[in-house]
Image 1 (cartoon, rainbow, N blue to C red):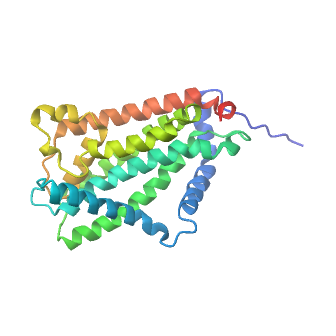
Image 2: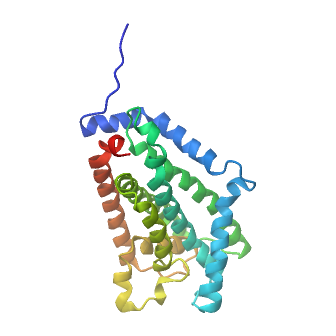
Image 3: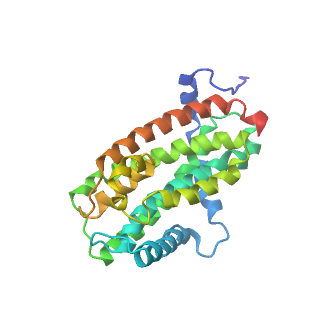
Length: 272
């Protein structure tokens, strides 16, 4: 009788090979998170649309009606929603992945598998919400008779950027939250504060030119500007240095997130 021994890969190559071997666990965890998120809710997946729509209404009123922010001829709700979707994806992903390891502590302490599967599956769950919300954005664009231009070809690139930024931040926060439970309180504050530091409710063009480069060091600035530029038929003038900065920061977030996660992963079962 052959005995099967399951142990962690000792090299990076073996680790990533293990990650491929456990791909079915990745699918299972992502599907489970989707089911649990909307379990026993009346609206169900409708919350994927309700949340950004309600936030869109509030930001449209605050920045568009009260603040009188310029929209460049774009209906303000459409302007806000194009910025709201990538921001909501990021905020939901880092919140969900941040709690993912702690919520699955029983699984982590009993069997071996690459722990990055848990954090990554939470990002995928948030990405599904993001795709559903995009369907509403399409409806809103049809309502306002907005037809995308050739810029739409760049849209997948900016989707890839926000996915990468969400994954990188998610890995950092997930690993930090295992050891420092304070992040359970810090993350919601960062998400709430970051909403107003990112151009979700306004265009980057309202930022004075002398501060625009500094403002662009927020990785979401280039991503949100890119979303609007690619979707709103060329009515948005994009600040390209912010896109370059966001791209570099996203790559750094992914690399450093994987590095820190792998560095601390071996202690998760003991600490959690």
